[in-house]
Amino acid sequence: MRFFHSGHGAHAGAALFEVLVALTILATAAASIVGFANDAARTVRRARDAEAEMRTGSALLDAVALWPREDLDRHLGDRAQGPFRMRVTRPTTTLYSVVLTDSTGARELLRTAVYRPEESTTEASRAAR
Image 1: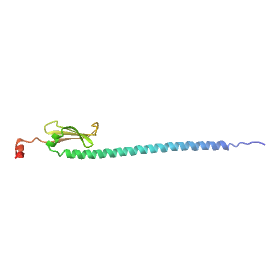
Image 2 (image 1 turned 90 degrees about the horizontal axis):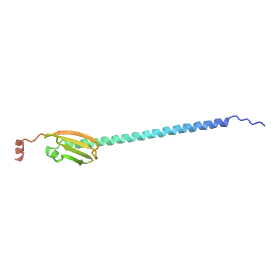
Image 3 (image 1 turned 30 degrees about the vertical axis):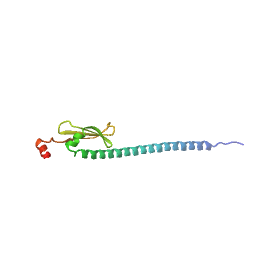
Image 4 (image 1 turned 45 degrees about the vertical axis):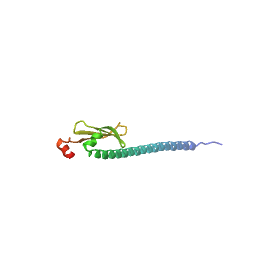
């Protein structure tokens, strides 16, 4: 009796190996895609948070821009203002600089300058009447 080996077992083993390699490649690609999708979602969330922070800060600066000299003078210096730090300085007698930073003061968000003319003595005497 003669034994004949046709090689079918070796072919089946190679096919199984190819399937395992293909599944490994597919799993690696899928994991990469999921990782990229998670990174993109985090980036979108950070962008939305930053936009909301800017809108809130802009609304605060819009209000500050309407303050009279007396309010600006009262707020001179660096202080917490809601979720922000606000620094009001007066580089000249008629010009105020307002800087809004994050709560730690490390990252500047917005900056503006506000002009407020000095009251003349005639306006001050009229206001006193």
